[in-house]
Image (cartoon, rainbow, N blue to C red; front, side, top):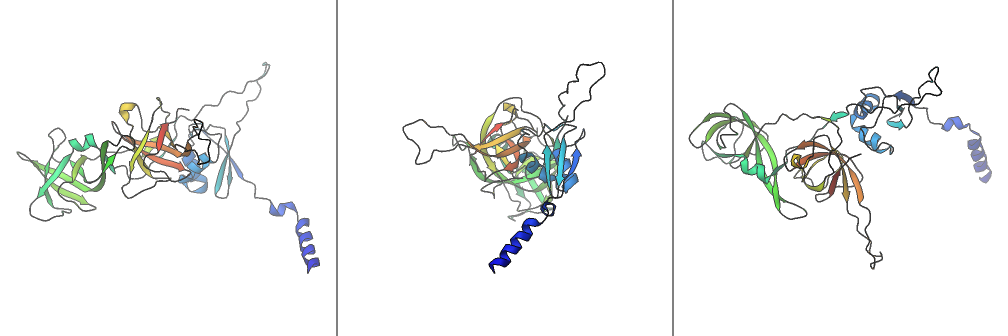
Length: 332
């Protein structure tokens, strides 16, 4: 039996190395207008692969920095960027041609999908309209039902549609404990049909959940889901304050809210790093003032901004992310 094992082992060692060699990759040269999103969708039919493509290439700090002429190696279900650029040919009558610095892509864009309406700030809630009654004593309303609404004349336009949200749990700031808003859930739409002395009449045009008295009205926003990446112009840091009310932890492709907005200089398309303070272990030297580096949790992209609160989409995460984790803007 031992002799047979030795013979099998010898045969395996004698097999040509080519038998175990991986099939060589296809090499593609990036052209002007290419994006990480588009490359992933084109070659492995998975546009959501691009955060992995970005994460697996540490020399790309920011996805702005992909260049025409850069090469990618395309394997079966996997893409790698090759950190090299084409060289410029020497020109006649010149001592030596200097390779120019490649120009970054003008625009990097991708689609942002997800629920961007699960939180409302205290300021916005105070200004929102309310559904106050209907024509009878029913508790819930649905599509086609008549409703009576109270809202300010500045925000009301007869003939326009408004989103209806039920108001949920109070959200307090994870650091100060101050109330900063509420969780909300989209329930449908209502169209204003006429104005009266104290209220407006309306008709519920869409119902996707329980519509009751007390639902708030907000204008229907035309949100552009094609986001153009852009560097932040100011260094900002803040806290994750909320996310979808049914989620306790968040990961890639989830949307969360931060206590930063346009008043602070945050813009749609800004990149943010997500971190968590790292605590010293029980065995650490307690007689020293130890400050450990933060734990890197992931990267996110700002997809919607308000005056004081913004929504961000998690592009990649290394572990679960929670309310109270810290964020800061990417300047490089």
